Image (cartoon, rainbow, N blue to C red):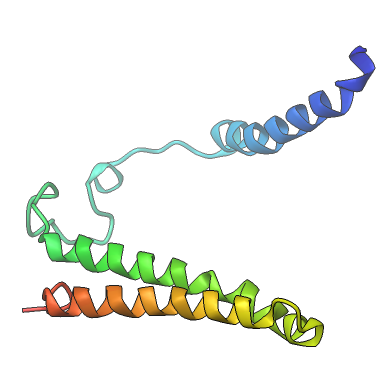
Length: 124
């Protein structure tokens, strides 16, 4: 029974090896010479202008969430687009599949219009 788990154990060991060996080699072989410039928050030479914990406007997050939402929903159309020709050739469920995708697109458009009307896409 133990020989059945041998490939799983080898997979885990190889994965740990690929993850830990570069970290250990970097720690052992890399030179460690700390200095004032390396210890500063920014190595670009400029002092920070503002506090790193400043508050961001909520609109940044809102636009990012809306982009991710609509981007992921559009990604659901790619599998449909790749097999739609086969549905047309089969003829059985072509109109059902087409109708369901049109309902999906209609829900996307309605959601986009609602976001637009509520001013979520306005940047002032």
